[in-house]
Length: 452
Image 1 (cartoon, rainbow, N blue to C red):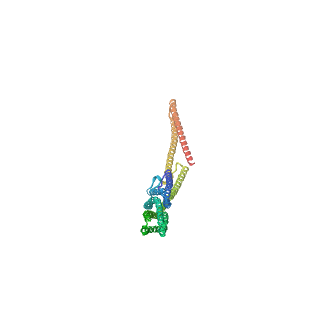
Image 2: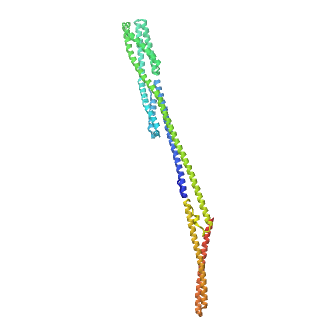
């Protein structure tokens, strides 16, 4: 691991690493929160798609069986489902929806889209069939009433022309059959009940058989009024049959569409449900990755804390070593100390080694000054001794000379002046000596302060 050599560098490195981990942890937390919100939004939207598939199917079934042509609720639900499915597939930044980031989710949404297109087509086709059939139901009612009226006229004319009771009974049954056909056909168009359709077919076949028998019956043909009424009834009957067949075809198409919607609604629901679970699972996996990253950052942070503790302990040990050497230096004779013993190792911090070098340099300078001061004192004392010796020799030499009083006085003055100079020089040297001693005393005081 990288290991800086300076105290400031170690502090900067430790602080920088901890700050980096802290910033990364904050960024990761913000990112997790943002992603969680977006993923929750997407999962919620995808979950609503499941509800929409059920709503579309429920509303279309309701419209079919409640004889309604108001498809606004169905159309709104289909539009919402389609637009949302497009957003889930392609993303929508305005809504905060990002495109799928997992191939499985993409494929599942494409599958839903593939199923949705024919599903939507069937619903639109069913709406069209209902729009065609519902207005015709009113027309069908008019046609039923007309068949009933014409059948009733046949009965009346048969009674008026005094036909056999047998014909009147059959003709009267036609009136009942027209109502029966209307009843069961309308029930069938509303419920698609096969039993109702069977009743309708039986009534229709019986009515058709009877009207054909009337047309071919010789006795009826021999009665012009009755026969004309039968012909008119038959003509409207054919129109009625065609109209009823058209309605039944509409209903068959509607039933077919309903069966398709019923079956594929479940498949779309299941596929959409799988897409939601894939989105949920992907979001959970992504959150787990974020959590793992948080644990990783926490582990790195703990390692950095331990590393920082190690650096701090090392710095403290080196500072204690530095203080111990400073104390040893303060307790030693500054003039006799060996500075090599007080040098710090290369493993010590740069600042401590620099401080140690400055102290050693200072001690060296102090030693040099004290050494020069001692030399000056010794030389001063030696000069004073030599001046005193010269003065005594000069006095002895002058006393042996045979000089008159004037010359002797002159030499005495010169000797006195020389002695004065020697005394004055001695005093100056003594002052210098005192100053050097004072300097030494000050240096010793500095040494005592260092001990403290």
